[in-house]
Length: 216
Image 1 (tube, rainbow, N blue to C red):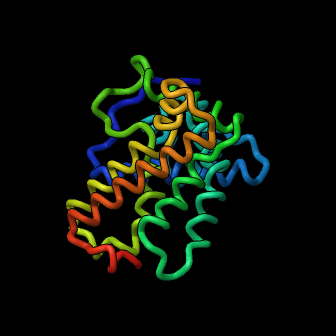
Image 2: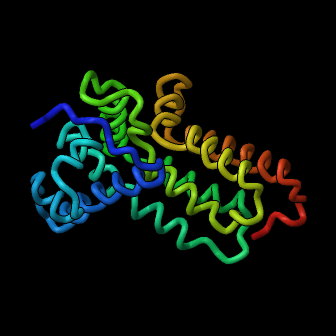
């Protein structure tokens, strides 16, 4: 079932991201219980209206796909960040995240490509200026990886690093690595690690943090 949604409410980007995350997290929780959730089930679990769900997801199938992809990747990312030792350098911490996100199975990659296809070309189902259609989970993971350094980087540098890392991690980077560069999974992962390291070093240099002070 699909309906043409209205424009999402005039919320700040952070609030929109939290609302969208709450809907997907509720769907993931229902899937983890072995359910095939309905729109009503998700609305009740997320404590939102069915109309709100359609404000963020033009079709219910897109929501189910987003939740499935998230469930398949969440555990590996959480584990990578939880295993980080105290005092680990920012470069090493970001590398952990990159490897956890970029090393995916062919089945998960197919799901990711389908999700990109649905959000890149939604037709008339969603307004063009509604804000990000995907990537909120990616941004949250990047922010979690960088969190120990939030107070040590200039706020503008921090934000730029989060955004620039989002360009070299995730489905879009993976698709370019496979389809444009012809890289294997392992080669693509190493390329993302290399690019992420370069961005981290640039941010540290811009914040004037010397190599000797780059441990957490």
